[in-house]
Length: 189
Image 1: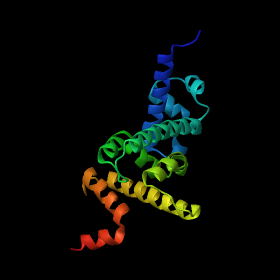
Image 2 (image 1 turned 90 degrees about the horizontal axis):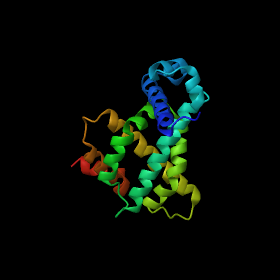
Image 3 (image 1 turned 90 degrees about the vertical axis):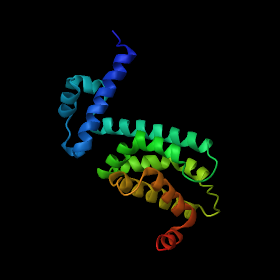
Image 4 (image 1 turned 60 degrees about the horizontal axis):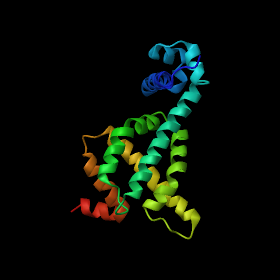
C-alpha cells in the first residue's frame, strides 16, 4: 500500500527539521540517526525510507536550500533595475535563508558554499554585468565578490546590533560600486 504524498512530505520535513535543529547545535560528527529519529518521533526504518545516512540528509537539505536561493536570485535578477543589491529582495533572502547561511558557515560547510557558487554564478555575472575578456580575471572578481558578500553578511547576521539590514545593503552596494578606498575616505570625514 502506497502512502499519501502529503504524509510522505510531512515525514520527510519532520526528519529534515529534526536534523537541522540538531545541526544548529552540534557538529555533524556528533549527530546520529537515532538523535534525528528521537527528535522527529520516528523509528530508524522510517529514516532509511527517505535517506541513506547523515551525509545524505545534509546533502538533500543543502540542495533544497540552494535551489530555492537560486530561484529567488534568478527572479530578482530578472526584476532588476540596476546592478546594485535590491534591499527588498535581500530582506526576503535574509528572512528566508539567513539562518541557513550562517549555520552552514559556522559549521565550516564548504560543500554548501561550493554548490551555491556553482549554481548562482551565471546569475551573478549577469547581475553585475560581468563582461571581461579574461576568464581568469572574471573568476577572481566573482570569488572576491561572492566571498566578501557571504563573509560580511554572516558577520552582519551575527552582529545585527551594529547596523540595520538596510544599512548593510547600502554599505555593500557602496563597496561594490565605489571600492573600499572611497568608502574609507568617506568614513574618515
